[in-house]
Image (cartoon, rainbow, N blue to C red; front, side):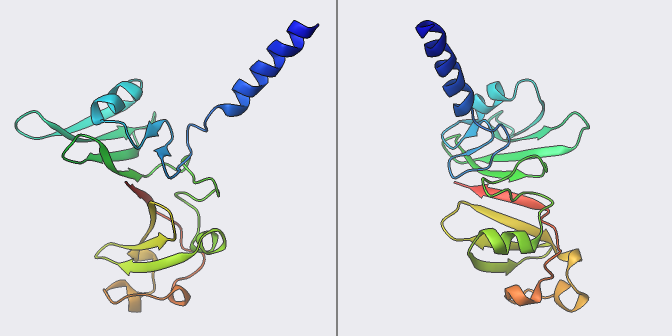
Length: 172
């Protein structure tokens, strides 16, 4: 009986410790860790459809992964040392521990995070949050026309709460 209890407690603790394969955290995006090189990532994602971005020299500088429906899931760029530097998340299955990801709304971000900066660019608006390595992007086409073509800094009150997140950028 003691052996059974010991084995079942070990099995339970192993199940409880498994990482969510779609969680975006400060140190990982799903099974990809901050310290993984692109070569390691190729091994980790071997079962996925992968498109490799390389230089003429053959050096791998990034890669893109696709889901079973051929939809872009992740785009990964490396730094000079081959470590993943920026991960773009397009897949709705990937979420932060607070449950925010692609498809979440601006209101969801405001409820869960302290927004420190809202920066418009040509096609999107970046929403940076305090103490996190990720930035949420919303499509500028979702904004009112008066804001859509401006590159002036935005305030949170100018953004409709129902605008969805189009991408999550994780920058290490």
